[in-house]
Length: 291
Image: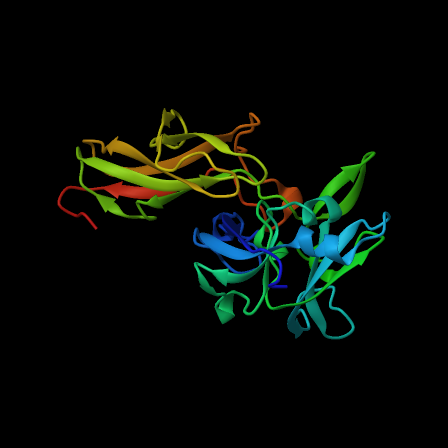
C-alpha cells in the first residue's frame, strides 16, 4: 500500500450513539454523554487509489470493509455464529479522495486502540464506517446486508409509504457545549465564556447560536475555527450570568451551508442513534459557590 503517495487530512469521528444518555426514557446501549466524538489528523492512502489499481467491474455497487475483531453480538437478533465487524460504503463514497486507509494518526503509527496497523477513515460518515484493524476490502454487486448495518447501526426510512431498513451513513448536523459542564455552579453577574464545537457530515457549519433561557431566545456565538468540511468548528459565547440565583438551561444550535438546522427533538426512526437535537446543559447560579 505504501508505494502509493500518502495524504494527510483532519477528520472528525463521532459515534452514532454519542449523547445517548440524554434520551428520555433511557434506552439500551453505552450511555455516552458528550465525549464520543473527536477531531484527529490521519495519514494514509486514498481508498479510491487502491480501488483504481485493483480495477472494478461496472456493476459493483458497494465496497465492504472487514476488521479483525470477531465475536457474537448479545442483542437480538443474534447471529448463528461468530462474525467479524464488517461495514460497507457506497461505491461513490468509497471512491472519493477524502476516504483513507490510514496507517498514521497525528504523525505516528495508528495506536492499537484506534485500529493499528490499518484503519479506514471515512470523513463525513459516522464512526462505525471507520473500520479498525482492517484485514480485508472487497467489492460486491448487491447492497451488503451484514449485521452491523441492518440489525445494528441502521434506521427506519420509508419507500412508497412502506417502512424499510437503511444503514446509517452521513453524520448529521450537531453542536455541543463543552464548557460549562452539566450542573456546574457559576457566580452571578459575572462574564463567563461558554465553549463548544459544531460539525456536520457532507457540508460546512456556517452559523452557531446559544440560548441561556432554555430555548426561548437565541444569540449568535463566535467561531474560533475557519470553515472546513469534515472537521469540527470550535466556538465561544460570552455570557453575563444572571443576577438572580437559580437553575438555568443552556443550549447550542447550529446551521449549515445547505440551509439545514438542528432538529428540535430526536427522530424516533433512528432509535438510540443520531442524537443531534440541541442538548440542554443545566447549570446553577449561586453566590460564592463557583465549581
